[in-house]
Image (cartoon, rainbow, N blue to C red):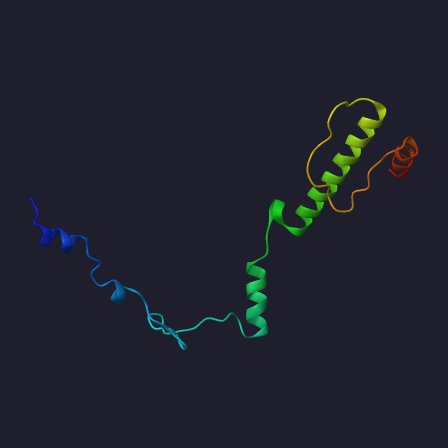
Length: 114
């Protein structure tokens, strides 16, 4: 089929050094430009608007999700105190700002707030 010379030619990396773009101190030689981000205040504002997130991952959406996770943990505490739940508690890290409810007085205080 193929001789050893033909196989060596097929498997050899021909032109591997020539295919890579050369990067120098001035920047990439293929693009001929160097991007370091926006320089003017207007350009920085435009980039900030492009990074704005919408929907569930917006700042307001994440705050709402955080508040719901705190409320869910507190409901679990109340259910555990009243005997509705038995057994292991929910595993994992507690949300920031979460204060555990350990007494019925704390439950009454929480209900009075709402």
